[in-house]
Amino acid sequence: MKKRILVPIVGQGSIIHIIRTGMLEQMRSFCEPVVVLIWKQADLIEELQASGIEAHVMPKYNISNEYKMIRLKINFWYQYFKLKSPSTDIQKKYHATFRPSASVLKQKIREKILWLRLKVNTGYIKKLIALEENQLSQEPTFAEYRSWLTTLNAEGIFTVTPFLVEVELVARILKGSSFKLIASIHSFDNVTKRGWAAIFFDDYFVWNKYNKAELERINPLFKNTGRINITGAPQFDFHYNKQYCWSKDEWLQRLGLPHGKKVILYAGGSANQLPNEPQYIKHIATAFEDKLISDDAIILFRCHPLDTIDRWKAYIGYSPFVYYDYKPPAEGRLDHNNFTKEDEQRLISTLYHTDVHINLSSTMAVDGSIFNKPQIAPYYDDIRKDAEPYLRGVYYQEHYQPIVNSGVLNFAGSRGQLISLVKETLQNPTGYNAKCQDCVREIATYTDGRSTERVIAKMKTFFA
Picture 1 (cartoon, rainbow, N blue to C red):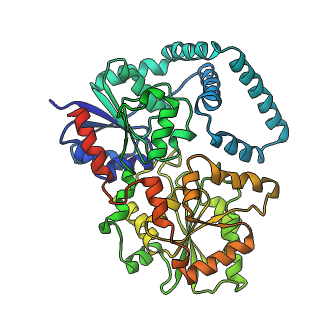
Picture 2: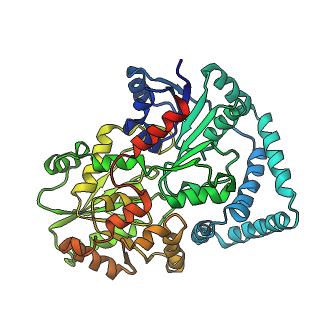
Picture 3: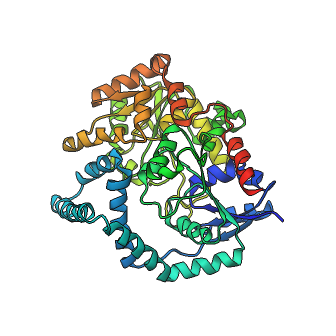
């Protein structure tokens, strides 16, 4: 009998990584994957069941405020005493500029008191961790999950989101039965941007040497054990597969774009991370209207899955030079939506057929670099000049530093520089894309489109 292995699906990212790459189907050769979704997506469940894969919806994760407060304190300890990543303060300082000063001051006082307590009393964190484990065991959600897992007869887990609390809870329960726990880190920022890991998995698949070093930093026992495997990024395999790229005519037709125009792709971030970001499209659109940029080009805005199109359209207003690519959520949370093969083809075709790419500290800089597209990085804030130094700091978060160091980014330090870079890269793209493949190798390690194969080959030795 093949082992029944749970495979959590928690959003579009895990759908792409596990299902669309073909990883899930390949797992069937050596185990029985049991998909567990964090939300109910009827069309996805039907698709899985039609292909003979068992699918269930996870119980709701509800915990008390008491548990949340314990967890918050542990997360603070983890960030400042264990992880020690510059990303923590960079992000905190930037977001603080958008909050009332009184609120920021109160938070600083609370955190300083907690920091002193943790510093002076080294046994306090041990007490908190023991308290967390005891409190969790008393939460109704814990008993519900344990009962639910019993009915599924699970014998292990493979996840791309080990830091998500629902997935972590499943792993903690399974760990008690000595089942195999495997994690493939979905995004290269996950190790340094997520909170405290209450449990470590048995083996990990990561993108690059930096992710490996980060995991070894937070758990020195991983060093020299072979438990962290550098496999590259499976979700980039599509970029090397020509079957996922439509012809230019089909792409233009499907997105409703005009023929005979160069296309500037702006890949947006989420509102909660980068609230002033729509200004850059507005600046470029205005430059078109003022004839500072030739009208033989247009802007295509691709909306982040954790954002809505409304804030962009409201700020930018109508412009004949701006087109939008947006998939509304099915229900509930923004990321709770299916991501079909057609959606993947739409993304790959967009990356391939657009001429210049712009984004603010996004993974899309790596996606675009695979296709040797010039990467422009806005480096200013005309709406909040007081926030500009902190905005610039966003590029120097730990996970993003190797991208900056690769030299692939063409920084636009002002509105004028942004317009100049757009004009120059449209006219002479090869003068601005020399570092693209350096960036890809630095972040994704491999450029062969076979990362899924590497994960499957190793996973087979764990679960067969």
